[in-house]
Length: 567
Image (cartoon, rainbow, N blue to C red):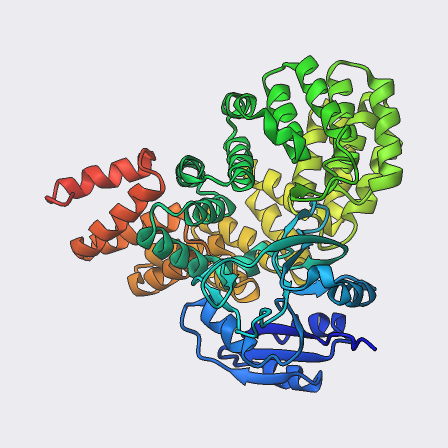
């Protein structure tokens, strides 16, 4: 009689009291849970023990492989699933997992399921493969180990890679991107520092270059990201890795607003279209921006032709299903085929009405067809609550303004909905109606929190009420400590009030949250120069040049420091 293999889960955690319970609950039915804590100051350890986990401790050494190996050393089960506290195992996955590890064909392999990266309300999730399920010991019973300070990978005892197999029927859910500010606070400086160390130590490692470029793109440092991705593409030899690097290059060019670059690179790499539906969407979007609508329709249609059974490698949610339909409907509206565009928009709303792309498509189509009532109903449904999808209210407001007086009438109720606060406050501010901005902030601050405090702070600065502005930005930072912009604004106000020490601390906090925050870097440079700390100013200038060598603010500071003999 065959004995079913045992299954455990390995986690490394730190200060995850909020997210850990959902993760561990999703692992109900596992034979063992192994948790290594790297220095929590909250209830993380107590929570892990309450779920029956075997808990160990390991001091954080800026080395993910070392921490993973510490967790792996606890494992005595036949198989382990590596999972993070901000991830969940999909519902009903345990039966499929048990069947997979009982299959002799899986023996010795690294199994790679799909992970769904869930983003903020209304934003499409992304899907890609992750190496997570394996046997801690190989056939010869020698223990496997992780290598790599970051983006660690499993190796056999002799250092060779573990053979990989894709698995479906279950997946992981990653919630860490739902709050970008929290993610930046937790990971930004740490990950970028580790990745930069990696590329310094191994400048010809294509994986290091790819990961660094990908991380830079997450933080909007697109020129640097582009350079590292191009380097990765030049170095990589594995066809699958080359395709992935090229796809990320296309995503980055698209984010930079370079449709010509997208079409140049994409046309040179048509092989991407066989595996990545997003290739066709990126190409189509670039063609739309260049008003090449017939080409755009062809690209979008190709995304729909990919086999639904084709294994996911890396794609955005809906890239082979509803997204091509939505983009084709947008092209129909651009070609003034309003009835068809509206018909498709209504059908998509019935199927994918929680997606921001679909909601905005429906509003444009309904306005084109004169169905103002449907637009008013949808706007109230979307905005008479908080929180709302990131940027959705602003996009709705901008879209409605395109329709003149009709759109303005539909904008009027926004002031009475919490979700309409941001576009209304920004428009009042642009019109110089600062007292009305402060009144609006007072009305909604208890509901909206940090964003209302930040907008109030900006209005108070313009009214030269700096002490009040300082308190407003301090409240914003307290309520949302992961938002680098609030920290930077706090620093600017402190600098205006002559408190250079407080200004320096605030700007350093901004950079800790978002290492790519050029504005905070420039302010820190100015603060160093103001007190005559030219060596520090020189270091900051070098970092700013690396971020944006041709930015006018960087050029201006370089000229200023050159007058003092600082290069």
